[in-house]
Length: 382
Image (cartoon, rainbow, N blue to C red; front, side, top):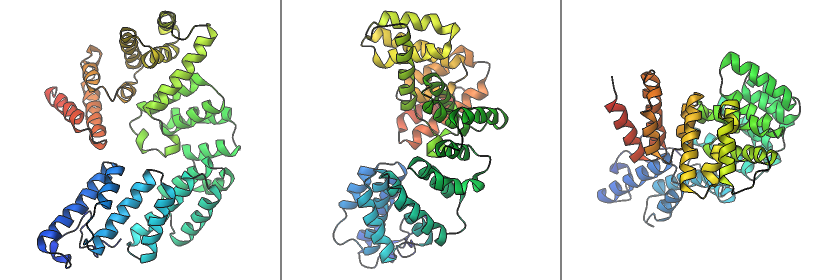
C-alpha cells in the first residue's frame, strides 16, 4: 500500500495532519495503532496482530483500516489460514491500495498460500504470471519458488530455474527431489563441496539425503552441524533445521540403537549404560542416547545427568551453537556453560556466541534472556 497515502514514513503514519477525518488526538491514537501493528509483525505475534486489527474502531480512516488489512493478510499467511489470506490479499490488490513493492510481495504471498495447501499446479501458474510481471526476479524469489516447486510435486518444473542457481545447495536439493541425482550422489557432492566452500546449506542437503536413505545417524549428524551454523536461519527454508527436528532425529537414532541391543523402553539404567559405553567409541550415538533420555525419562535425576553428558559431548565436538539452540528455553543452563573452563582459551568465540544468543533471543521477543546474555557479555569483556 502507498504509505504516502497513509500519511506514513517507512514503517508507520508520519503525522496526525494527514489523517483529516479524525481529530488530532484521534489521529495520534491511529498513528500508534499502526506502530503497534508493525511491532507485532516484527515480533511475529500473529494472533495478537489479527486481534488488534479486528478491534479497530468503526470510525478509523480508510488508510489506517487498509494498513491493518495488509498486516492482517501477512499474519494470515504466517498462520497458514490460506483461503482467508488470499481473500484479503485479493481485496487489497483489486482496490489498488498497495504500492509497487507491496503489490509484488502480495503476489508472492499468494503463491506461498498455494504451496501451503499443497496446490503445486496453482502455485506454478501463479509463478509464471509473477515472472511475466516482475522481471528481473531476485535470488530470494527464485530460491523460494524453486524450493516450493521441488517440495510440492513440481520438481521437474523447478529444474528450469537451475541455471540461475548454479553451484548452490538449493540446486543440488532440487536435483535430489527431481530424481536427477540419487541420495548417495547428492550426499557425496554435498560433502565434497562443503569441504571446499563451508556453505552450511550443504548440511541441509546431507540431512535430506540421509532422510531419503533412512539413515538416522547421518540425519542427526547433519542437523547437529546445520544447527551449529550461524547462517542456518538465513538459508532457504528447505535447507534449514530446528532444535525440534534435531530432537526428533536423536530419538529416531536412539530407538534404532536400542532395537539393535534389544533394550526395553523405560529401562533408563540400560539406556544410560549403553550411552556411557559409546561416549568414546561413537560420540554421535552417545549424544542420541543421552538426548533421548533428556526427553523420555521420567526420572529427574536421570534427565539431569543425560543433559550434562549431552552438552559436554556437543561442546567437545565443537558444536557450541547447537547446545544453545537445543536448550534455548534454559538460559540459566546456557549461561553456566559459558563459564566452562574449556572456553577460557577462546574468549573471542565466547563473546561472539553470547552476542548471537542475545540477538536471537531479542528477535524471538524473549527480552529477559536477551538482557541476561548481554549482561553476561558485559561482565566478561577483557
